Length: 375
Image (cartoon, rainbow, N blue to C red; front, side):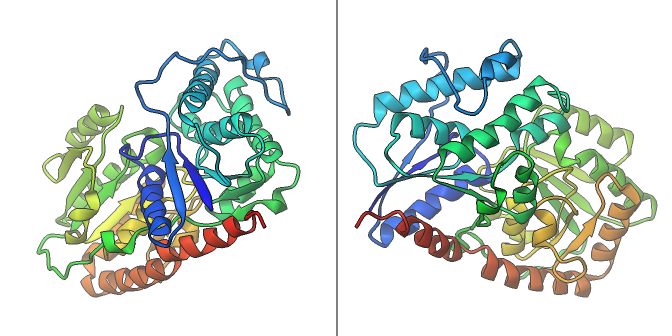
C-alpha cells in the first residue's frame, strides 16, 4: 500500500508535527509499507498562480486582509509544487496541515485523503495579537474546517478538547476521530541525576500564546520567598527581547538562561528536574509528553490537550491560565519536595510510554489506513 505523508513544513523545521511524522514514516517503512514524505520547501514563494476555489464558502469576501492573502498565495504555491513534483499515484494520502490536505485532494481527487488537524492557527494568531477575534481573518480560518470536512475522507485530530473546539464549525463533528500524537521512545532516555539547585526548563516558540511572561512573574515570586532555582528557556521567537527585559526588571535574569533555538532539546532535557509551560492554548501540547518521556515532573495550564495528558496531583500539576500565584505555588511544591517531584515524574513517564508511544500511533493509524485498502 503506497501512502503519501503530506506536511506543510519541511521535516527539518522545528515543531512537534514535522519532527514526529518522519519517525512515524520510518516505523511504517521498516514494517514493509511504502511511504513517502512531501512538503513545501521554504524557498518556494510566489510561484503559484492558479485560481483558488473552495466548495463550502467564498474566500474572496475576505481578500485584502494580509493573513488571508498570504494563506491563499501559499495554497497556490503548494498547488504549483505538488503538480511539479508528484508524478506517481498513491493508494492513500495522509495530510498534516489544512493547505496540504486541500491541495492534495484538488490535485489527486480520486485518492482517499485522511486529514489530521494538529492545531488551531487562528487561536494562535489571536493570542499572539496578530488578528482580532471574530474578525475577517478569524472567519476565514475557521471556515477552513468545514471545507476540510467536505473534502477529506476522514478527519482526525489530536485531542478530545480540540475535537470539541472544531465541532462549532462542522456539520458532523461526531465523525471526527481522535488519535493523540506519538513519540519515538528510543529518542528519550531518562537519566538518574541529582541537582543541588532545582533546574526548571521550558521549550517552546517565544510568542505570547505560550504564557512565558506568567512563568517569569511566578519565578520572581519564588526568588522573593528565598527559593533557589535555575530556569532554562529553549526556543526563539519575536518576544525574546521583551522576555529578557522582563527577566531583568523582575531581578531573575541571573537565574534565567535564554538558549535560543536548539534542534534536539530532548538530548539534554533528562538532566533537568521540572518542565513548566503555562500555555494560553494548546491543541495537544507535544512537548509535555516529550518532557514526561525524559523523566521530568511536568507543570502546565489546564487548557486543551494539556489537561488530557496531566491528571492533577498524579502525574503532574495543572494551574489556571495567567494565574501567577497558582503557578508559583505549584513550582514551589515540586522544587521543595524532591520525593514528590520524583513520584510525579515516575507516573508521568509510565503514562507517556503507554499512551504516547510511537508504537501505539502506528497501530492506530495502520487500522485506519487498511480501511482504505483496495481489494
